[in-house]
Each structure stands twice: as structure tokens, then as C-alpha cells.
Length: 44
Length: 224
Length: 237
Image: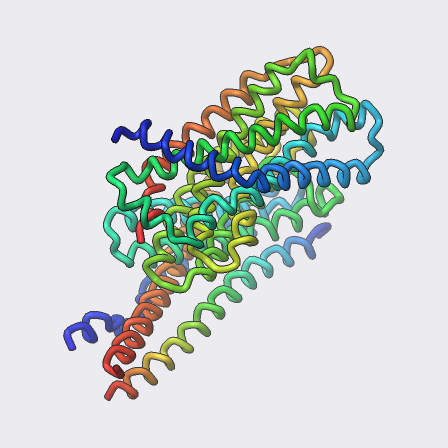
């Protein structure tokens, strides 16, 4: 049980990095979706 | 017009432009001098410490100088849009790049040769007995620097923040050159002096890889 | 109006639910393998279990950066923007994987060697690769026009990718000349450990594929926004 904390933090870090990345992509995507919707409405 | 002929013409044009003003050469030499002096404040420049840190600092100074001095290569063309005129000429577009690479190589090598004795004096290093080997390493490393630097200066010329972008792009890519040149130089300056075949071959490989890449893909950068 | 329908991004999701389930199962199996099934390493103890995801992330990052190389060359040859979209997606995902390498490395090093960072060959090379492709991404933010951005990124991407083996060799040879206590697997691997490592790599490759597909879709949408904007500015005149 010696280095348990380090092991846990490593795995948490891996999950966190991928989650942060996914969230960043999702956020950019929703902003683009808004842009597309707005542009299509303006075009009509 | 053959590739070599047109490249040589471009080279002559670049050299003539520079020697008419001479400001770039002088400024670069002083810049490297400043870097060398500043570096001397970061450690105790005794003879043994200098032999330890000297080669790395010398090459770092050259890389910094290169990444600043290579900017004007394409910026100069942009101010008068002379690049468009060059592209209209019936020459292989790579010859424009090759001519600039050759010119940058000669400039940088000249700067390095001017500063080598200054470095030797400031840091107490004996260079005369090993001068040919040192010049060989300088040349091989500078080919890599000039090749990638010229291509990336064409890249940066198309972007914003180009003064900051060129060092940002160039320095990471040149890390292997820094390692190889530093190690080769350190080996030469050691007592007894040794010429590392591994590092020299590596520098040649680096140069061949990026010269080929520049030849294959560089001309896309010159398109409109 | 044919242009408008051509530029419309597919309304289907970027990744199918099935693929998400498959990758999730792979990751679960790999985690079980790494944390429980794999034999405990003799000298380092449980902290060594980081190694499975640390190393497989690095290998996956390489695969991603190789795709940047391929995409860059393909773009220059075909001028089809979809190759540029693949390149930027792969570059971003590759940087994410190397971030994992650079974060798990010190977490592993601290309890084993007492220091957060050792300039050991593999970690140093990973750091440089990370910097290299972050520079690629920064370059892209500094060029606004899509075709020009694709072209300069492709050239830099090719040079950066070609640099990878040169970086690894030079740092490795430097380390053999100036040896330092080596971190990492000090020796050959137990075959059970190899199997877990391969499973972890498969899981990471699955994660990479999903992330790249999603990021690719993002780039498709960007292109659609650009196309719509250009259409509207044209019809406004």
C-alpha cells in the first residue's frame, strides 16, 4: 500500500486529461453548431 | 535555365543585397557576442567549466542568432512583392529556395567563423590546433540550420506574429542539431581531441533528410 | 445552391454508440489487467502499474503523429481539405496522449527515484515531441485563411514528423555517452506483463480513434461555417 496515492493520482490524471480534452472539443462543437444554425437562419 | 544556374543567380542576388547594406551581418555578430557575454555570467568561466559548458552555449547562441537572422530572408521579398516577380521567371521554383538557403548558409557560417576566435579568447579554449575539425562541424550544423530555417521563414512569412513564430518552429526541430553539434564540438575541444564519427554522420543524415524534404515540399510554400 | 448541400456536415453522430461501447470495454479490460491481473513488479511495487498506460500512451501518440505526417503529404498531393482536417485532429489527439506521458512520468518517478523529473532519454524525447506538435497547433492558430493554413501546416507537419526519429536517436545516443540511472523497465518483461501492455495499447488506440473521429467532425463543421459565411458575404454584395 506504499505508493497507493501516487498510483491513484496517475490514473485520475489520465482520466482527467482525456475528459478535459473531450470537454474542450464538445464546447467548440456546440459553439459551431450555434454558428451554423444562425448562419442558416440568416440565409433564409 | 538549369536548377544550379538559377539557384546560383538567386544566391548572387541575395549576397549582393546583403553586402550593399551589411546591417544584417553586423547586427547578428553583435547579437551572438551579447549572448556569449551574458552566458558567461551564468557560471564560473574557469578553463575546465568553460570546456564543459562552452560548446553548448556557443551552439545555443548560433541557433538563437539564426532564428532571428533568417527572418528577413522572406520578409524582404514581401515588402516589395518581389517574390511574385521571381515566381514568374522560367525557373524551377525550388531554385528560389535553394538560392536563399545557400545565401543563409554562407551568412551564418561567416558569423560563426567571426565569432569562433572571440569565443576562444573569452572562454579560454584552444581552437587553432583543431580548427579544420571545428569548421567541419560548424559547416554541417549550419547546413541543417540554414535549410530548415529558410523553409520555416517561408512558413512564418504567411502567418501572424512571424517574429515570434520562427524561433518557435525552428528551435524544437533543431534540437537534434544542437545535441549533435555540441557533442561533436565538445569532443574536438577535449584533451586529447576526438572527432566523433557517430555525431558527424548524424549531422549529415539530418542535413540530407531536410534538404530532401525541402526539395520535395518546399516549393508549395512559394505558391500564391 | 448546390454548394450549400455539399458543404453540409453529416447529421449522423461522429462516433457510433457501438464503437463507444467497444472502446469502453477495452479500456475496462485493460485497466483491470494493469491494476489487478498483472503480476506485481518486484522492486518498484504497485507504482509500476502506471507503466502500462504510460508506455501505451506514448506508442499511441506516435501513431497519431504518423497520421499527421500521412495527412500532410496527402494534402499537398491532392489539395483535398479533408486531409488537413485529419492532420489537425491527429495532432491535437497526439498532444493529448503525450500530455498523459509527461504527467504520468513524473508521478511514477517521484516515489521510485525521489525526484519529479529525470532527464532520461525517453521522457526528454517525449517532452520535445510534445513541444514540437504544440508548435504545429500554434502555427495553425496564426494563419486565418483555410487553404493557406492547410498548406503551411502540411509543410511544417512533414518536417516535424521527419524530426521524430532524429530526436529520439540523438537523445538516446547522448544518454549512452552520458549515462544516468535509467528509469522505466529495468530489464525484460514477464510475458504476462507483455500481454497486459498489448491490451492497454489496443485500448489506447481505440480511444485515439474515437477522439480523432470526433475532432475531425469538429473541423468539418468549421469548414461548413466558413463556407456559409463566404456564401452569405457573396450574396450580400
